[in-house]
Image (tube, rainbow, N blue to C red; front, side, top):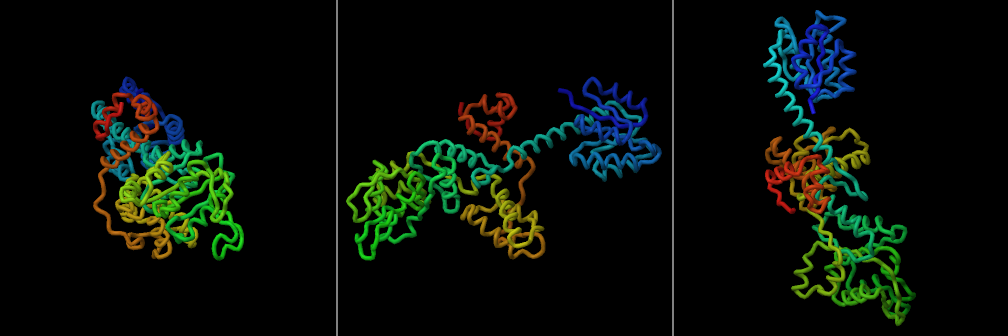
Length: 448
């Protein structure tokens, strides 16, 4: 498809000459004044504009042409406007370049020079449009309260949608602060159990002598202080979801009893003889290495396999390209509003530091640091010291940024289409050979 060029000149003869010189290679739009130029620019979406500075109603004055340039850049700050001026207007042409014009050519225009400048201009325009498109595709999306633009988290969102349709136990793995409880709640809200209770318990926070009663309930008189019958959390989450956080800290005796419940959906309260049938879905989570715990004799292998029908491994924040900055912006909006400081913004070096930090505490650490910064920052800018972060290393190049965006898009498309190159290429609007070329350039493994 031919690129579109808009020629803006009040001299009909010059417009005609330039049109005939370019028609073979480009689609041409014509305008003779500012109003017509803006209309053509908005409706025709030209990739470049050739603009004369002397336009009516003041053709002998550059101000109307400069005003047209300003109006075009207001509509699109990335617009490529080439000034076409007489030899005596060179100073004004340079003034226009300073105001945002891409380049200038002197009249009479040399056709060869014009073609060269246009090719260079259109190449740059194409790169910039592609980059903006990549950025648009990687804008963060919110799923069940979780914000992410990274393909790693979008893959997790897809898995949540799938696993929510069943009642199978789910094991959520991930470092502290990665959002394991949010994932458990998302599974519940996406399921048919959403109208029923969601109950959460931290297995490491309850004393060993109380956790059995907490989970399974007890009968009156079953132990000192049991002055009445009490349902446990499993019964409390009937027809809903029970989230067992830090499952690796569950005592051995309770592991046995939980295994029995998972096998037949039946339980006995502490001190009770009646067997009670309960339909409660179990979602468990841990930041520990359960396989190592099994090897060390601390966790039952049979319970592990009962819990791990589906395993969701959450990526650390440092593995989620671009998500730290997006999350930081979202947290800042929230905490700035809470503290009556809606004018707060991040200084550029602060955003760079956020993107570069390893975030050992993951999303929870990021949230805490932004909350603190929204309180402690002087003025309306949050700086590195406000978040108590180390200074970031030197910035990445535009090429590195573009490659990171391309890699993310390709990985997400492959994940969406189970590694099928043809379908992934179609989603991205590129050919299969181009997709393979990008994979080779970015060092991605071929899966088809």
